[in-house]
Length: 288
Image (tube, rainbow, N blue to C red; front, side):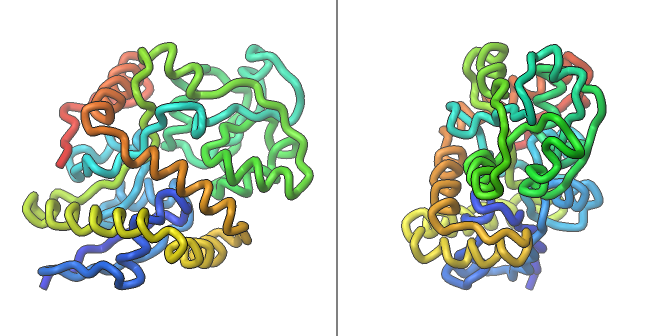
């Protein structure tokens, strides 16, 4: 029997659809799953680039580099459609956008959607500082760097308040994105499946993933404790249950954007980033 190697990202919103599979609440038929939890999105991006996993959750910005090797699952593209997950730009002090362009910019990886959107929508920065763990970025604000793009803003704002970190909101990626994209959804992350598995098996995985996602969404109170446990182990982050729940609710919205809108967002994102020479050309958005 074929074994599919799954790399689940240790972030509450991206993790919740996999938890019923991890816990055995939903079982695949005709294939086995080998699931590992990967601590950061940059680690995920590197693993899919090296084809070390059959299924994972890379940044949308990673797809042009892996388009020949992976399908995108049409039911698993995280797309922002409002300011709830709008990726605010946070600074250690009050500053203008011109000052932001000269600042030390903290990102959690060179191939992340957050950094790609920054390059597309703002462009310049003084120095790039990479801190792979999102919640560790907070500790670097004001010391290692001056500005960051808050990808997981619910958790980040909570952690900042808990640590007593003062921040200033300069703007948001979403506000800038909607102006250049004609209000298209803003792609952030996606579940991809290796083409080496073949389309039939990829579709079978998509089906069991959808069952797992729907189970999780209907049974959140059962899923959240495991989510908290995995986050604690992988991220060293002791997050409150309430924050995890709020994060998941935000991501449920992102992962349930209608497919035609998802495609519109992806097409816009890849067209704009290619036109500016930020990402390679996407020959075909290969959705299953």
